[in-house]
Length: 234
Image (tube, rainbow, N blue to C red):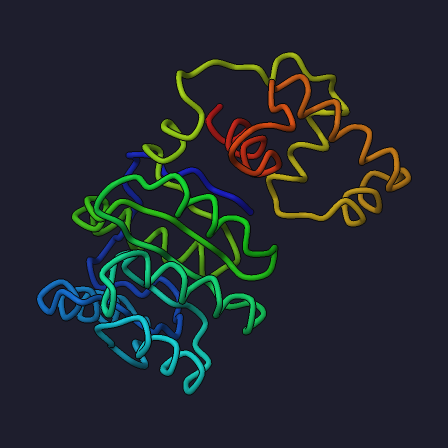
């Protein structure tokens, strides 16, 4: 399941209702935001097993506690660059099924595509920090990622893909079906099994999809990710 975040607010009937228990390591160098997020997550039924303030501590905490999810700032100590993101990528490769929600002050295209390219297992998300101000939206993202989904900030999608359009209309019904399965995180083999066709046929469909969406081999970003984002933007 891959979800494009919208501005539609999720329902939280009582304000205290649990949204599903997720064990979380929280990595954020800002003390006020870190404590506020921890309190918010715990209030809505999640378990924050560790709160840390730098990327190295995040690695230690995830290795020790084996959480369901890492919620991390992108820019963190010790280098105040992309330390949080690089730690998250390493941890996702080491711990299969680890969900990651990366938070950033601004859209960094390389950060987003790097994180989205870290495998099919475990949910993943990239949100601008301003989304945290919408409690229902933020909690909905945590829940979806905890369920194995992918949540991409709409501003990230806009900047990755440029001006909106609908090139998906160029695809045949079968190609749209293949693209939908791609958006659900399935491999070529899994898609072939779902559609009862050969893996070679799936590969051919994907090649056609990339061509029709204008995603040539010289694109800076991963073409499969961009194809999925094009589908989600619709």
